[in-house]
Length: 74
Image (cartoon, rainbow, N blue to C red; front, top):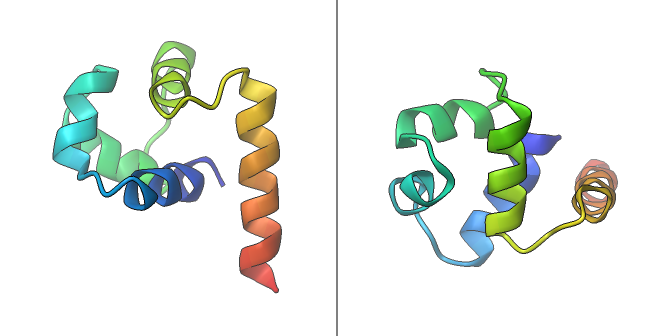
C-alpha cells in the first residue's frame, strides 16, 4: 500500500524515481524497490518521502494510501 501510494503521488507530479530519490535520501534503485513493495524502509526514509510529497502528518498519508487502495480494488 505504501509503495503504490508513493508511485501514484510521484507519477501524478510527473517526476521520475531518479529525480525523487536523491531528494529523499536514497538512490533510485532503492526507491523503485520500495514502490514495488520489495524492500522495507526506515522510519526516517518513510518520513522523508511523505514530507517530500507534502503529505504530513503521517496519518494524512496513510488515509490517502488506504483510500487509493480501496478505489483501486473497485
